[in-house]
Image (cartoon, rainbow, N blue to C red; front, side):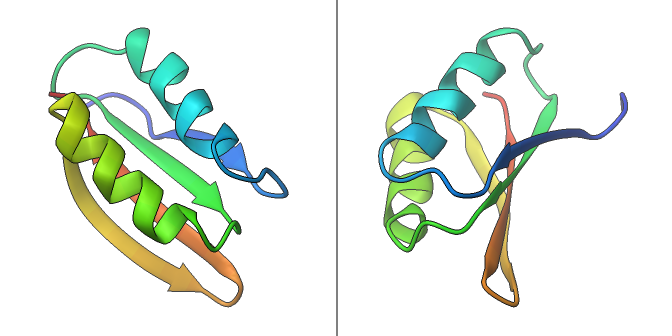
Length: 75
């Protein structure tokens, strides 16, 4: 697998974390993984919904203090 790709969406409010993730995923190959760091409470709902709608796999969703970390595998 390639290097870990991290999208810093800290401080961004809905829908910006998902919009930035969508744009970043467009540059990746199927199977590549994108890690998103967010602190928007709505991301807990938005990121899994985005993955389901767009055909990506939500590999993990964890919390590190006030930050949420999502790993998405491009579909």
